[in-house]
Image (cartoon, rainbow, N blue to C red; front, side):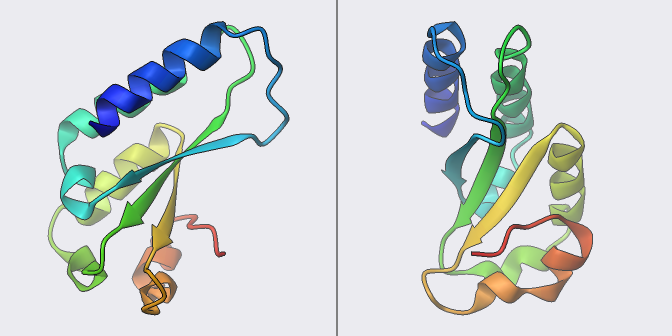
Length: 114
């Protein structure tokens, strides 16, 4: 569903006669398991490519879910780095549980604080 929504948003906004303000960010909520799915990187790259001719928004993936303790499992760092190299930024929605301060995320990625 997220990938379909990303494609729809890219299609509608990239052809709209609007000027995006500098730093305009579009967030999509994803789970950790979705983050580890290689198809997400393809969807993110397609989303950003849709804006090559005009104003390009920042794409931010917001990790949602209450089980951020498993965020250190194998493959996670590679997925983060690969997506970040494609121009994607990250945020963590911890539902007030305090996981947004996970130091290993902040040390390896540019995760915005809220």
